[in-house]
Image (cartoon, rainbow, N blue to C red; front, side):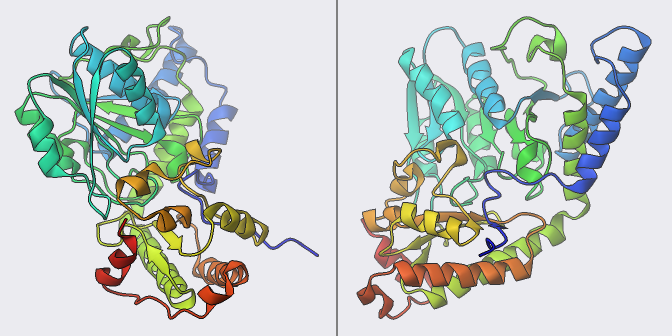
Length: 410
């Protein structure tokens, strides 16, 4: 029997490189550019291409690249390095002695990891709780920020639920206290418009492979007035803040992927939102006890976190893989772990919901036919896996938060 064509609904883990992006990268490789740090003519030619890409990326993301203290676009190897550079670079620049940091309970592992390391060095990290719909608690934030706070790091959009966070409001409060603010925007850039200046943050992380660009490159946008310490050493590139030869073709690919998003941002987001809603509605109607985690909050248009009550998430993910549907049980950086989702636990979801939830995420080229076929395969799989008594239950209402939250009570 021929295997079924794969339907990729795990785009939050990574996205395929668009043909237009691959083409400009191939052309860049074909040009045989020299090292952009070299002083000879060939090096200067490569430097112009690199700096053109850097400037274009900054402009598209709303950075202020003019004036006496222009914002900076620092190329990194990806979102994880960008988050590490921001957290260590901003926190340690604020003072050598351990102090306090405010983050949230739903951050990505690439933020949790450096924060845990700082805790081991004596720093006190406060992790904001979230509402039942996974929105950080503003009241807790205002109570926690104090003269000893050296950094705030809160994501712009959650990688598991897609829930958007009130970063602009949080950053405004932090600025009033003179505290630098970093946001992990890896899942938002290339999915929704992002304006660095309007958000009011000090630093913002992104990764090209999340929006159909190449893997291996990301960036950290840093406000011109911010002091940032490097955590890599051994070169003068990028002002010494991130030494090492800049990957010219990858930077060109990042730029092109962002340009393609900018050219079709609104229709792309609207189409993904419609497909996501169609996907969720059909599954709620077709399988009893299907819940949408975070449904009551503003969400990214392409992300859906669903609980299939009565089923085991690991078993269901494996069965869907065999059925040709790629999804995940959480962050790709933690996919090798069998631990329950820290995001859903922070939301106060019941054990049944946590144990039965999967993440589905769409890409720019996901089609309506793929969504309809995925719905058919998922419903067939859930029906086969469901206990007999579960199959006879009446489906939950497809609208209204009351029915969803009644089952979410811990």
